[in-house]
Image (cartoon, rainbow, N blue to C red; front, top):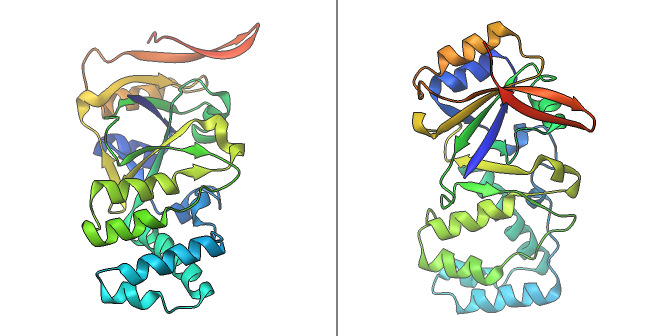
Length: 247
């Protein structure tokens, strides 16, 4: 599964190339206060609260059984706090896209088309790579899942973590044009990729030759025959396309 990372021509971008990684940061440091709709306080209805209390009473863990005695609002606060603290303390994120030829992405994330894009091949079965879902409402939180995995699996199990990372990969439909995917790490830093995962470089329409040369030099650890492209603009109709790079 090939995804595309947009880079501006900056020192931090060059550091990513040197380190062969996508920089991952806390979602609170990303460029939109609603980078994850899942951080919004969910509202649990009476049926969900009833289900929570029933499952808490049946739990094998004493601390879970004690939760059943909490007030409705305390249970709502607990569930929202659990999700928020898990993601704030445990995971950091980087963003990519399904497309390399989106005019807005080149404008916003590649410094007005002066930057570049890397095509990187990811394992589609890696639960640390999540497709963003675009919605104007949140799906119900699976309370049955919460108790089942709290009691039966370690907190780092792929099933548990995968569900929560998917829950946090939800954004408003206003962002749907980005066709975003996210990579996640357990430490702030780089989500590493192997040299053979880099499949192509796309230079922006306004990328200067000095930047193009720096990028190739910093990616010298990749295939010598790595495909290089230069973005170009068609005006009839208006769209961007990649043509083979000519030095």
